[in-house]
Each structure stands twice: as structure tokens, then as C-alpha cells.
Image 1: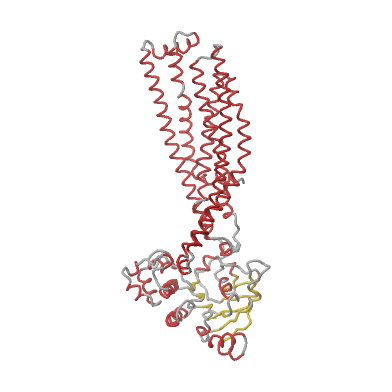
Image 2: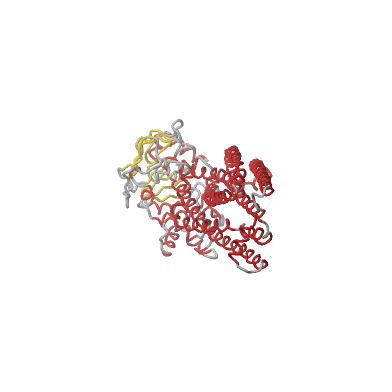
Length: 592
């Protein structure tokens, strides 16, 4: 399916509104075709009634208005001009409002679909691209669909009908003049084709560079604390200026292309107009055409060239919009490589038995991060994955909620391959507490309830109490209605972590995943948080990732990951006695 046909498919739910607006548009076009005729009859039937060339018009005036004075006839015909203009304007107004509404509705549909699909795509997709670029596609590239509809479909339809209607009338008036007037069309078509590809290419460049500007600005402002700390304000400004200048140059290039193409088109239309004036004047001198008729023909020539010019600019606008739609479809065409199996089932509960069977994973097959991992986590058991930085611990943890799928091997829950369980129902059985708790720019209440939107106020407060967060929340001016600020900036690290734990308490899922939950905390806060986490772990299958060996030494089974593989498994004291990789980590931690 072509890009344009695929785009127009978004308007199928609004077919009724489109047909209604189309019918009104036909009436508007008809009234526009009538606009020149009152002035023709003023010239031929009133101003020059004695000329033989104008006898027909004079007779028509006499038939319509009888013995009414010429002055009153002029006033009536001038009133007809205003009436035609007013009625055409009203119809065009309603038509435009309907078309704009349809275009905006389709934009809403596309944006929602695009955002929803981005949310559903696996982390591997998001890891490989800038978040600002995805945001730009949702917020800005998607607007191309409105351009294609409002400046594409509607303009092509209205301009096409206007051209056909105008040409038919012009042929009936003087076919030779009509042919001369349309002689420039082949040259216009060649011009459009010549510039169309350049405009699409340059428009794509603009979209990419505008996306880069947004990325630089977003990253620089999001990291403004670090920018100030290192005194890098000037460098950040230079980076932004460089990116913005590249966007400026791309815009200038496209503007230059548009201006050159517009000059060619306007020159062609000037040739056509001059040819018509020349031949029309000869016809008037030969008495084969009246002055009033030439005036009407001139008006129709403008009515013909205006939509022709509009179609030219529409073609180039469509090429620019096609660049934006192509970027949207690039996302929508991206295959989800973490898909549910065709026969995937929904689960409502789980025992919590997690098994890694010969698991291998890498972002590409040439560079594996994990290889040959075999670990069995029994229901209700706590297992800690430890190892050096980059060993693959967090990656292994990410396989459980299916943020990624293994390249080889399987991850099973209660003996069933995770791929055979729908992602949504699987994740409903899992609570996650991360090293850096992600908070939204809203209230504390809404941030805690994010894990279970239907929770009651009492349940939210109970979860906060169990996470030892209730006291500091109530000390805030607005309590649970307090705003946390962007990314929780109004709260300390420890407070944010407690809210993350409160979320997990509220969700009350049978599986708990902890990814470096205390590594950013001072020892005192860490000890307090770990007491809370130990309560959270009770009765749940828990996997914890940490560099803090002391935190997990006596907490349960320990799995040592090194170079992407499992090198040791067992209880902490037993592994220390073996003198292997864990003993080395343990003694190294105690020497600090």
C-alpha cells in the first residue's frame, strides 16, 4: 500500500463528514463560477447596449428586468455579485471547518496509535534510539497527516473540480483561448516532478535536524544540575547552537527550492496569461468576441490559474508531509521482537518458580552479554545475583518481566515458557524496585497508586506505612497531595526510594525484582531501607541485584555472575568457605 493510500485509511471513520463537506464544496464551486457573469451583463447589456456585438446580452437584460432603469439594473447585478460571494464564502466556511475537524480527528487517531505502539515496543527498540526523536515523531511528524488531508485531499478535490468547471465554461466561450490558456500545463507538470523529489528529501533532512535540536535541548535541560556543577554552560550552548544552525541551513535550502520552483511556475502562468490577452484582444478587434465576454474570460483565467497554482504548491506540501508520515510509519512498521506466542495464555496467579535454562542474550548475536545461564529460583525463595560491573546481572533480571527475550534458551515461570504467557498478565505478577525510583510530576498519592490505579486511599496509606514513608509524607505541607516535582526533584533519594517500595507493597505481587535498591544510599539510610525491603520480601519469590555484598550475604541463595555466565551458586557463608569468585568479592568488600 502506498504511503498516501495508507495515510488516507486513517480517515475512513470520518467518511460521512467528508462526503457532507464535499457536497457543500460543490455548491461553493458552482457559486464561484457564477461570480464573473453579473459584470459581463453590466458591460454588454447596460454600458454598451447599442453595439451589435452586445445585442444578445441587452436582450437578456430586457427579458430579465423589463423596463427597469439601467441604474437599478446595475445595482441589482452588483448585489448579485455580493450575494454569490457571500453564499460561496459561507459554504466554504462550513466546508473548511468540517475538513479541519476531520483532519484533527485523524491526527488524534495517529498520535494515539503511534504513542501506544511506542509504549508496546520492547526496550531493545528504545535502547537503540533517542527518546527525544520518538517524542518528536509523536508531537510533530504526526502533524503531516493533517497536511495531507487538509492541504492534499481537500485542495486536490476542490481545485480539480474548479479547474474542470472553469475549463468547460472557457471552452464554451472561446475554445481557442481555452487551449492557449492551458498550453502551459505540460510544462507545469514537468516542473512539479522535477522539484518534488528534492522537496521530500530536504523536508526529511529538516525533520531529522529539528529532532536533533529537541534532543540537545532536552538532554541539556534535564542535566542542568550536572551542567552547572562542571561549569559546562558555554559548551552546552555551543552544542545547541551547532545543532540549531544545521536545522537553519536545512530550512534555508528548502525555502530556496520552494522559491525557485514558485518563480518557474509564476513565469509559466505569466506566459499563458500574456498569450490569452494577445489572442483575446485580436478576437475583440475582429469583432468575434465582445469586451464583456473577454472580461469574463479573463476572470475565468484567474479562476483557472489560481487552483493550478494551488495544486502545484499542494504537490510540494504533500512531498514535505510525506517525509513526516514516512517517519511515523517507520515506527509503526517496526516489528515487536518480544511478542507473545500465538497461543499465549493469561495468568491470574503464580507460585513464583522461576527457571533460567541455558539462557544466552545479546543485543546482537555477535556480542553476547549472557551465555549458558542455568539458575532455579524456587517459590518464595530469595536469590541474589552478584558480580562485577558489566557482568550481566541487570540484563538477566530484565528477562523475567520480558523487557527482552533471550537469544537462546528459555526462562520459565511455574514450568511454562514466558513467551507462552501474555506480557500484560506476566507483569501483573511482578513488582520491581529500581536503584533510581522513577517518579512522575504529580502527587505522592498518584505516584504510589501507579502500581494499582484502583487502590483506595486507605490502601495507599497502608502501603506507605509499611514502606516507612507515611511519616515524612504527612510532614509535607499537602501530605499525600504534595507534588513531587519533575522526576521527584522535591524529594531526597531515600524518600523517593521509599515511595518506590510503597508502590511494590501496594501492588502486592508474588514476584519481587530488586535492581540495586540501596546502592545510591548512605549506610544509615541503606540499613533502614533494607529493613523495609526485608518485610516486602516476605512470602515472595525475590531476585535482588546488588554490588553491596554485605546486604545479601545472609539473605538467601547467592548466584555469582562473571563474564555473562554463572560461576558459583550457594549460600553466602558456604561460598566464602569455597574460596572462589564470591569469596574474592566478599573479602574485597570487607576491606573497603
